[in-house]
Length: 263
Image 1 (cartoon, rainbow, N blue to C red):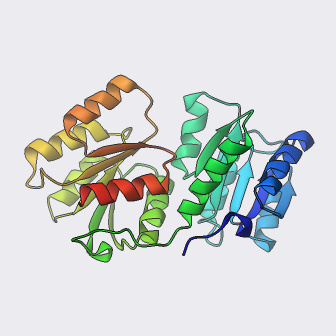
Image 2 (image 1 turned 180 degrees about the vertical axis):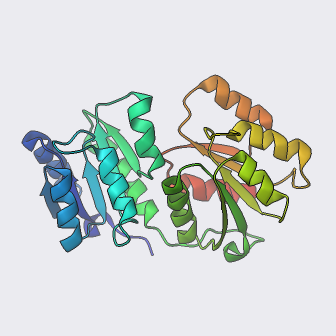
């Protein structure tokens, strides 16, 4: 069942009073009234234990921690691990943003941002909670066997959660390309979802090996990656990937790509 914007309960984690007011003002304008606030990571986690939100909107730099550590703590908590998380930050450097992408953030907004940009990010959050099954003409979603390849456990969990909401139930996980090839040597899969940057064997080499040296050379392969180098991404396309989408990815995009590859 799809949720509505006005049903969302949002926790804003932001040390700046001015920034909290801006975010709250935009949310109120969009019909979201159930808001709570925290100015530190510790306070946010304490409040979440008592009042679990649907969405956490956080700054990257907090007085006692970072947004990256906050989302990691949330993902490690059994009762909170599936909470949607949105980052708002002026930070643009890859080395600071990539860890939070890997942890399963639903959206990253720059500072300053517009109300329209916030609305787009909120719609991605609604997609994250969308439990409508993916519509596949000739396949039952629950019978599709998916291999998820990513060295980040939190990233694998995030992908699994989104796919489960689409009705997909059968998953096998691999931590890198070598591990994935071992899995492919023992069983058949219907779909592979892989990261690009991984130790031992990256996503590009994995795709090349699958296409040339396995008996599953025609399997659909979806790459979900935070890689920003256009030359590397072009090489992935040439290697035979079925589709590429960014981290953080929009669940609606993944849904459409899956429908496309199984058409």
